[in-house]
Amino acid sequence: MKELFRTTDPTLIPFATAMLRGEDIDCFDLDVHMSILEGSIGVMPRRLMVADRDYFQARAILRDNDVEIPKKS
Image 1 (cartoon, rainbow, N blue to C red):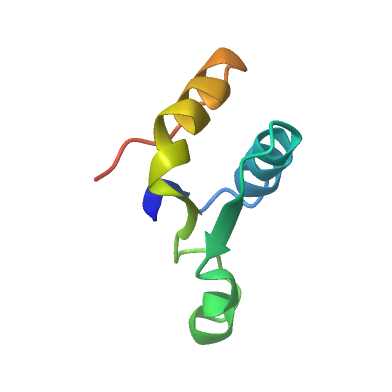
Image 2: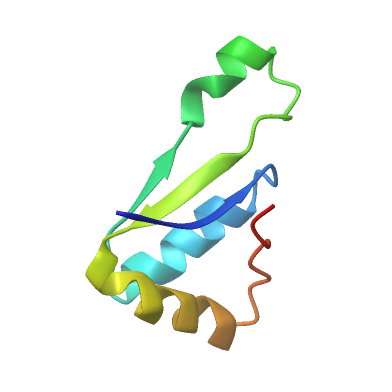
């Protein structure tokens, strides 16, 4: 598994997930339940993961659809 991106934007992961699944690329949202620890204030980033074999295709799909992929810090 490779990390496609991480973000605190609550709308970006569902949007990217819908696009990738539309192209038959499985993706997994990690750290979804971290809001329990942080108190739902949205400071803990969530990660979107894809299989190694789908990584470059997934990035290309997001780029081609003008999805701003947050840079790794």
